[in-house]
Structure formats: C-alpha cells, structure tokens
Image (cartoon, rainbow, N blue to C red; front, side, top):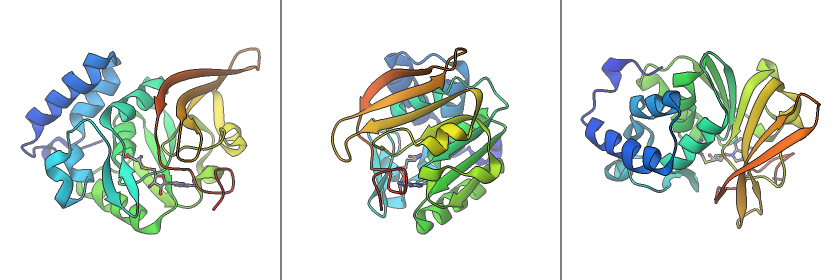
Length: 223
Ligand code: SAH
C-alpha cells in the first residue's frame, strides 16, 4: 500500500482526470481498481524525462527497450482478475513496478517477476521510495512463474506470449484467474482472461486487442 504521506506529490488533479477520462469513461467501474489507480502516483514510476507525460493515455519508455503500460490497460488487466481484496497475486513483467503497485493496493501480497536485472532494481527502488512493502520483486524468467510462493489467487502477465504458459496455470489456486496478452511476437495480440470452470473445463474470455512487448523465456517466445 502507498503510505498517504508519500502520495502528496502535486499530481493529484492530473491523476483524478486520468481516472475519470481514461478509465471510468471507458466502462471500468470496479471500486477497488478505481481506488487503487487514484492512490498510486504514476509519475514515481516513469523516468525523470517522461514525468510530464505520466498521466497521458499511452505507454511510455522506461529504458532497456521496455515500457510502462497505458493506464487503461493496467486498469483492464487488474479488473479482469476480479480481486476482492486480501489475495496473493503474481505479476510477470515488473518493468518499473507501476502495475505491481496498483495490484498491491488491493491484494495482501504481490510477487512480481522481471527478467532484466536493472529494471527489477529500479522497480524495487520506486516501490521502496513510496513505502510499499507488500510487493516483492524477483529477477528471473517469469514465463516459469515464481514457484517459491505459489499458489496464487490471481496472475497478471504484462508481456505478450504465444500462449498462456503451463507453468502459470499450475501455480494458480482453484477459482483463480490469469489475465495475459496472447498473440504474435510484435503484432496482433488479445488480452485474455483464463480460468478453470467448476467442471474443470478451461474458460477463456477476450478483453481487448492490445500491443505488448514480448514475453521472452522458456515458456514465452524463447530467449
Ligand atoms: N508491468 C509493467 C509493464 C512492463 S513491460 C508496468 O507496470 O507498466 C513488460 C516487462 O516484461 C518488461 O520489463 C520485460 O523486460 C518483462 N519481461 C519480458 N519477458 C519476461 C520474462 N520471461 N520474465 C519476466 N519479465 C519479462
């Protein structure tokens, strides 16, 4: 959770405008998701040179050829997980840590896995500066999940793969959901919400057409 003293940053009006125009206006009404987006100072997760654009309606570069996702996509992914509060959540693709911080506002505990060491370090710094203590960043191949803390009530993947990795399905608790972009490496991808029905059959819902950076790794697009 962001300590309220740490979010008093002078960007509150911009953040409110972002939530109203980019998130609520597009139909996201989950109160926990909206409150989380209102609480996390997005400018604290973008490089200094991009801070003026922190609340714009698109992804931004964060270094190492990676991006911070568009706010709406973070909201859509989080809403898709159907969190009610208090869950244990896994995120794959920490980047700068913004989505992990949003998830950490709702969940009890978040484990987030990033393959690029410098980004994992940067994310840890960003989270620590805001006093967020329930988000744990690990540097590893997240296409294999993070078995050490499994099972998870929900899993968000913020890089696109050819399919949902079997390793992630195996680390999901009964009744849980996985939200992940699936499709071509650089082209057309769909944000999917995956779960197992009571009858044990896989259920897949398409949330939105998206464009994410590729999930590289053993159960992604390869190294
Ligand atoms: N969640 C971020 C989005 C980061 S972009 C946000 O809040 O904006 C996706 C990230 O996934 C990149 O940082 C990239 O390095 C990472 N990534 C790609 N393949 C990965 C893998 N196999 N394991 C962990 N991270 C991976």
